[in-house]
Image 1 (tube, helix red, strand yellow):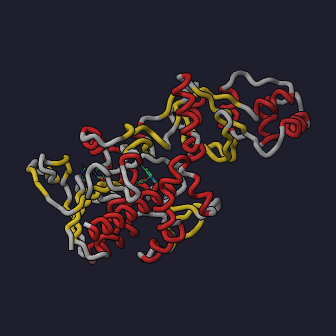
Image 2 (image 1 turned 60 degrees about the vertical axis):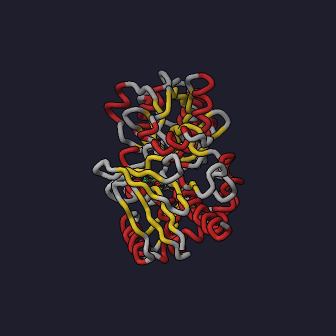
Image 3 (image 1 turned 180 degrees about the horizontal axis):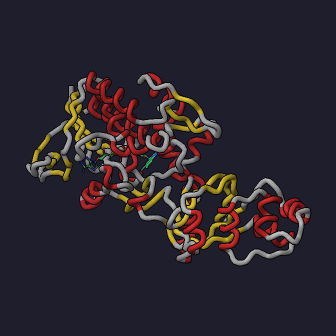
Length: 401
Ligand SMILES: Cc1cc2nc3c(=O)[nH]c(=O)nc-3n(C[C@H](O)[C@H](O)[C@H](O)COP(=O)(O)OP(=O)(O)OC[C@H]3O[C@@H](n4cnc5c(N)ncnc54)[C@H](O)[C@@H]3O)c2cc1C
């Protein structure tokens, strides 16, 4: 039996603990927060989207340029395995319209309770309020407890699963990546992924429509056009369609310092069909009334239409505007408000089992690795899959050592 310490009690670290304790190793999970998996619990607030039921090859493409890197870990723990695992913990799941998979309770807390009970029964030890701070000169792992006392550990292997750097108050604050970078590990600084965009709204939009959704849109950035809903916020727009456009927006912002979103408020019909319906409304009525009646535009959609300047009155020009409202984007919301982080530990630094090649016996997993994916269950799937893969790699490495 080997002693393995895991830093980070989020989904990736707990998944590693599950595999290692099942393989009869002595497992200790450290977390610097007073309780475990705070981000996982927060993820359950708006409905815990565990995974996605789309065809598996399509699923893996969501990881874009990291798809081939993550494929072995994902294939070993795919969406079906995620569902079976969740149900094995006594939490039935369902697939929502569109393919997102949730526990029937929608929450993370019952699943986490059952998971922690299973890990405890498998002998996993948890040390809370314990912050990992790096290594001593002779390679021992250093921790600092809540009283500020230093604790030195010499496990046979160490798994780091300290997360990204979004929502830092939940625990993953990016400090571990700085320690690792200072030790020479190749990493890209964390930056926001799945974050809202900043749009300088007029006072009319803000006063009347903050918090309102715009449903059934098509949103275009450059050559990427996606369908979905958005929500108007104080600072701009949020929503999974906005998050999915993040990489394209980031690229445009980096190149030009600004970007634009094009909203198609009625994507199911072409401009000619829309203009015919506008023409059929009485021309003496106000523009707002005609658009409301002809195209069922909500008050929020009507205000957004005006954000791009006074709408034309000629029906075809007006229909074209409805299908192409240009909104300037001045930035992305900061990392602290993003759902997830892009950046992290680069694949070049690791072997095929997520072991740091320059520091054998140290494995890394979860969101702290440099991959990114849209919302839709892909973040938890890859965090848990890489946690399990790192743990399996660790078992093999210990067997060979
Ligand atoms: C609001 C919100 C909603 C989300 N909803 C979903 C969703 O529905 N579906 C989905 O797939 N994903 C969702 N996510 C993303 C998902 O929660 C994360 O991708 C996932 O939790 C990452 O797992 P992880 O274990 O890699 O990191 P984390 O969950 O961040 O866990 C890392 C752990 O490491 C600990 N830690 C960090 N540094 C140290 C240190 N130096 N010493 C000791 N401990 C340390 C932290 O306290 C933390 O507990 C959501 C995220 C947010 C913020």
